[in-house]
Length: 472
Image 1 (cartoon, rainbow, N blue to C red):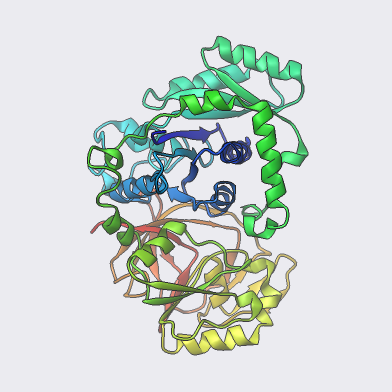
Image 2 (cartoon, helix red, strand yellow):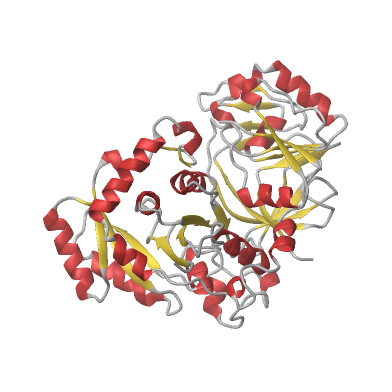
């Protein structure tokens, strides 16, 4: 088949997009379809489930944080057919609601986008709807119909008419309570002019386990995830019209799929996402440090860097011969006592930092500080390579897109480099310390948020998760 794609979206978070997406991916893979997945927006957790369901890496696509050339290159990579194959089915999963994104346009990006000059194009930035419009992906809308029936038709019709550049091609009902419930909602939606392509029941057995930052990580469910995916595949085969869903998928459009072929300029765009901080990079990778974007790691490898994982929770120091260390985000607050009682990791990283750069993102930044207070109020000594302390007992949600301008040269780039990314954490800085800031932050509208993070000698970090460097 030729490469085709579709977008699974919903009106809001928690409607069951990930469950429907995983069921669809697992069922199509069981049928022998060459299926691939991408995730709209900032997200570390869902892509790991997608990768488990398809057997292939899942890349993030973000139209606010990523320059257009990078966005095109990543989609072309995700949609590349396997060796000897003719094409793939590309399934994109939205984040939050279909039209939720950066909100207000950012003045610095004016003129970069196709269709510039249309206010609706700017309002879409960062949303899954923007990807649907940019690449011509039909939308499969997931509606949680618990607590309603015919009223679901008004929601479906409203989403279908909201933006003429975004085509809602079909609806899947989720959390139906009975056959009568399903039939009533489906009949109303069909009368509104939209096909209903399946309905999933309200069953606790289909739910994925969650914690404070979203789903429990796929790697922590290694023993049970295959059975869950198998169960979801069976539900999809029984409850979804897979043939109709395959038929609504359309060939992706955009610059990455022009006559010249897929991603002729992809290599420079990949490398430009974030240049590698070293030639041999020690990457913390375990249950405490699991939030690293696949496109960044792949870009580092394509630029010639070698990535050597190590596990702080196994009391491992950075591997010998590395010239940079990266501590990604994750859940150090769940493992603070263990990290505090890991002498080889602590001593090894301190020695490493005397001669080589070390950078921490979010959870990694927390571990670089003096101390971490867990949810129960217990205080744990961290590395002390930066002067701040953090608390998970004083929880406050920090969420949103961020633009960072670096204050000095460091692992993320030279002073003045502009990066786009996001924050998503509940921990707070309980003691600021006296380190120089890593960067000056702004939100997606360009509103200044002030200094962020810290840097001392060769060590740096902040709660900011980098997605892509911006063009000069």
